[in-house]
Amino acid sequence: MPSYRTAQRSRPGPRRRSLLTGAAGVASAALLAGCSDSGDSDADERTSAARRLRAAAAKDSRELLGRYDAVLAAHPSLAGRLTPLRAEVKQHADAFAAGRATASPSPASGAASRSPSARPSPSVAPKPEDAVRALAKAERELADRRGEALLDAPAEEGRLLASVAAAGAAHAYLLTEPEGDK
Image (tube, rainbow, N blue to C red):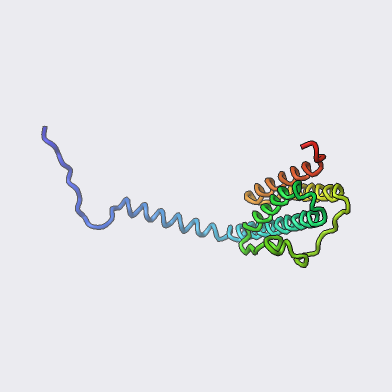
């Protein structure tokens, strides 16, 4: 059986189908670019809101970290119980600060957290049990505020807030548990 070959064109340049596909792609890109101009302000507003939310959450975590530091300074005997929780609060502050475009080092990190002049120290109850109760109350209040902030938070910040709020609620629970029940 003889084989039949089809004649191929040897015309130089792109084919008509390629040109039409390319033109459609350029037109689509132009339409999308035109539509996204009106959305830029919305995206900028969401980004700005996310930055403000992260900055406020980082500040709250640093303040809570300061409370832990003050209690540990006043009651070193609580170090075994509080140090792991303090470390998590530090991670929370760092996580919120990491998402900010102009994240500056946390004043509660490094030497600043050990410097008495870094920030005014919160008052600490003279009895260790009362100091721990006050920490539990601070953790619970912050977890509640973060839970409320979830309603208006963008997706990524909402997930982080939810996680940190849950950790704060767990910290509050652990701090209210009697020492021997663990």
